[in-house]
Image (cartoon, rainbow, N blue to C red; front, side, top):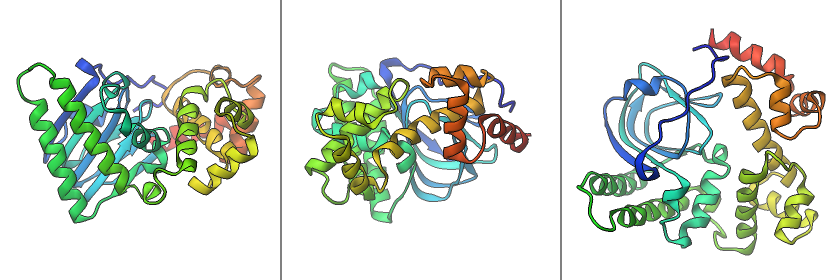
Length: 286
């Protein structure tokens, strides 16, 4: 793969939703890196090979659940063998789910890199496998009135179950601080292109920047500024790896005043310059 070639987008799907069963194989097109248009869950009941998400490689085995958000870059190694389920959903479909599951989605997918791989116990894998299979069978039925609503209800149940598996939600899920933290992640995912300052997000939420930073540290172990920077760096890396756009264009797109300001920010957070990061990726990919 030539990393300077623009990565193709995932194909659009009807109703912004799909679920499929993978029976000991992968579709050939999954070996080609592509940028996701939809949030994605892949339940690996058994498998081997490597799953590539952005610039991180994951070895496939068994009892794994991968969570990926819109915008991430996904591909599989050519020798992958997987049994499990592949589920994708967009925002227009998610709106059909009951609002009580919104907090689950925000924490799991707004900063998906923190929850990219969830190892599952045998019991959790069996329970999720049953839910995914039920959803898949319903999805495979002929169209009927309110079918999308039924699928959305299944998705809500799966999302709540996955949230319970996620260690970050194990305690204080409904606490005030968790709600503030999830709201903050939601705002970052929408506004990171235009706003990098903690004070801006705090003002939108009606709290002080200090309070937002304290809550972020208690909920994630990271400060509010670190969470914002992490989202910006993740997008910058994707752009440098999988597009041929000039660094200055990426800098302006991410709301930096000058390319030098962006380069300084990137090097401070990754220890390498944007140009060196791109060259390193080219070298490793060749």
